[in-house]
Structures are given as C-alpha cells and as structure tokens.
Image (cartoon, rainbow, N blue to C red; front, side, top):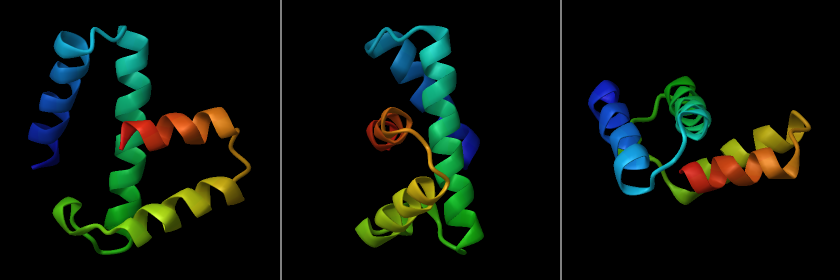
Amino acid sequence: MHEDFFTSFRTYLVTERRFSLNSVAAYSADVEQFLTFLEEHDLELQDYTKENVVEFLSTLYQRLLSTSSIGRKVVSL
C-alpha cells in the first residue's frame, strides 16, 4: 500500500509542484521516516493522530536536527 502512496506522492511533486529530483528525494525520505515511526508504534497511515505527529516531531528535536530540516519534514507531511 505504501508503494502506491509513494508513487502518487512523487508524481504529484514532479508534475504538479515541479520540484527538482533532489527535492523529491528529500521529501520522500521525510515521509518514509514518518511511516517508519508509525510502523514502530504499530500504527497505520490512515490511523495516525495529531498527537502522533507531535511525538514524531519531539523525537526529531531530541536528535538535535536543525530547525530547517524539521520544518521540511513538517511540510512533507
């Protein structure tokens, strides 16, 4: 299921948003990281909540990611 989502997401970024391939790769990696987070917490993509996003962002802050990296991840979601 996630592969269909990723294919559609990447197509949207390239055709509708006209993102560069580097940007598409970065945004895809951000979403993949969030999906991994959900899987680690036994959650499905369609079931996540605002609280799950806040928890995900909290883990990013704990890893001392830059605010620009975290900001891009938020936009990716």
